Amino acid sequence: MTHPSDTGPAPAPAPALALRDVSKSFGAVRALRNVSLELLPGEVHALAGENGAGKSTLIKTLAGVHRPDAGQVLLDGAPVVFHGPGDARDAGVAVIHQEPTLFPDLSIAENIFMGRQPRRTLGRIDHRATHRATLALTERLGVELDPGRPARGLSIADQQIVEIAKALSFDARVLIMDEPTAALTGSEVARLFGVVRTLRDQGAAVLFVSHRIEEIFRICGRVTTLRDGARIAGEPLDGMTEDDLVRRMVGRDLAELYPERAVTPGGVALSVRRLTREGVFTDVSFDVRRGEIVGLAGLVGAGRTEVARAVFGIDRHDAGEVTVDGRTLVGGAPSQAMAAGLALVPEDRRAQGLVMGMSVERNIGLTGLRTTARAGLMDRGAERDRSLDWAVRLHVKYARIADAVSTLSGGNQQKVVLAKWLATRPKVLIVDEPTRGIDVGTKAEVHRLLSELAADGVAVLMISSDLPEVLGMADRVLVMHEGRLTAEIPRAEATEETVMAAATGRAA
Image (cartoon, rainbow, N blue to C red; front, side, top):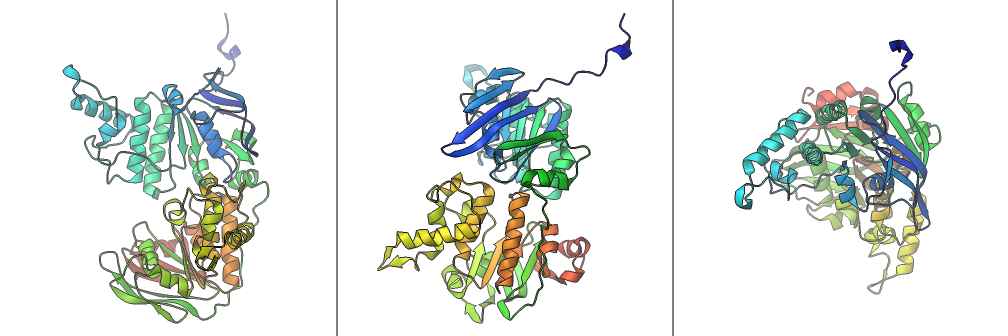
């Protein structure tokens, strides 16, 4: 008879999905180099690494989009070949993307069961059964959503819940969550994490990808770190610090995320007076001086991006005045703003900052079409020289400058947007969420770049929802609440408490 103490600890569960020594190349670029990874049932596993480290390629390999050049994908310990995403889905592997892709005019239930709704006699759709099945899925996730509600108007957080429910309707056992919190508020992140914990407790294997280091430590049990396509480590998070993880990701100690600067502001470069757009923002006034970084903070929906768009002339304002270096701008004329020396790096780089099908060279060159033209024709040599110069200055990583910008990592796409506007040599630079969705190493580079621009006399207005970034970078902090400017706080007095008090309307 075997004594209970002789049996030893329970064996670890077999991986639900794994990679073994997987390599993948695209031309001369080696995206993955002998990478191994194990996703265990009942565990949330983090995938960390800088932009360009190979995370997207690894995810697409697990999801059946890419087939490895070498190595194996293992499902329940047995080698498997996914010939496409459909194969992976049928095997129980689902990817929850940062930006859900639902049919906006269909209901939640119709989106979840699109093409496979329960049928009644004569082949008619059984809407009641579809609703019941949807309710069962949302109850399993611990959330309340009306199955009959159209997807149009749902928050990004609710859209992600619908995508997760859809994955569960396919009996997904492995969920890959790619930057799921990038566009969520704090309360929405907490709700999503509750859903993730529910899935974990029900035995699902979850791969969680995020650039927010604090979230990795909050929700995950283990982490695999990639650098330059190679696996650096796969280890428990217990006992690690955020600095340890950052060091593995970037291969060095990150000396200062927020570079120190000796600030001596010059004259006023941007002056905004009593700017108003009815129903959006009211009576907004501020100045930004040469050599100064001014942070514009506030909760989502406070009107920060809308003010920036009105200042640049994308949206017309109903009242007020914008002056750049003493030159008053006419509302609704971005070309006039550019001619005056104003540049705007938008929040949504993919939709508003880049032409994804165009090359890196052409994207950087877009703001210089007039200066690089000769007798009305493009001087391609001048355009290439200009683009190469700025790509080198900003350390943009690409295979060829003629490659489509869509082939670059998110951080390098952000650098291309910055290069495009810096090539205009602006007097005033407005940057809206400059480091959203990029890794910690690239974030440090962007901060260094903004500091250098300010040191060269550029006036910088930085909009950011990342409060530590605002406090670390801004010489002054302007705070908006419900379309109004509620506070102007000097750097020495700016704390999380003072900024949040103004952002929530608790400070005059």
